[in-house]
Image (cartoon, rainbow, N blue to C red; front, side, top):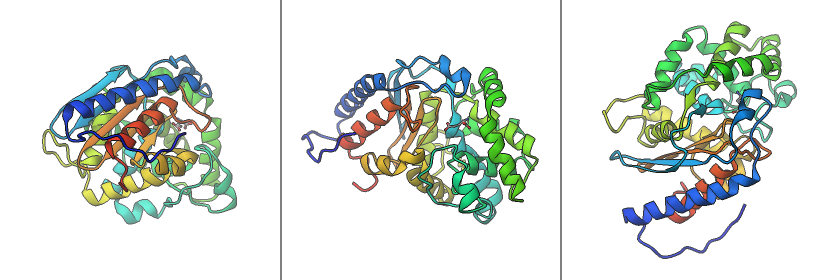
Length: 319
Ligand code: GLU
């Protein structure tokens, strides 16, 4: 983590300068990734190569500025929580969605069970496991996995997104903590759907195979008020997009969300598969891939690259 208020002088509108900074961010991220460690609590994720790093920045007019491992597929993991929330808001509405889950950051780890049992029966927010499982319990009464997959493909402008069977099986075999969360929610009378179907759909959504490009596309739709800028299709209402981005900003990086908000300031969501998605309003969708994680479960390279770009290109929402 570094902080500086010094700003080099250059033309921030010049495409060549923008490209230069994004390339630098890639190099900074690739270097920083050496400090991290790939996730191993889901055995299949331990097979990732911690040296991999890629960054894709998509612009509204269709340009892709990208470096490194941008085609490599990896599992979306927690970034699917953004998709689940988007589906819930779009089809259930605001009131129904937040009748079942709150909107507060926890300061606890992504898979914590603590506050659920001691502070409130309802999960704190949809960006942590308990909250995403709760959202999924509502969705599981109305949707099948294939329908959510179709929505994910549209959101990511990527028809090649498939379920990674190996990750799904590995996750489902070892997901005892998520099972504990689900059954705790059931014991409190809060869970809305069948626990096993809920968990199955939650695990499947975490196991979607994406790449940095698909994440950048999804970031772009978030940055563009819910509209696909290339075909004009409205995916999600702009009012819901504001809700989603606010929750990404306050809760998107687990118990590192506050620090990331201060140092990067881009609504983002991370996943333990190594992805980070970022949405820079009316400008960019950003996807990074670097499976080497820090202790909070966030991509070390991804955070460093995001910070570099945000600082030099003035992408912080409060700039
Ligand atoms: N599938 C992972 C889990 O539930 C998602 C965690 C993450 O990416 O933070 O443990």
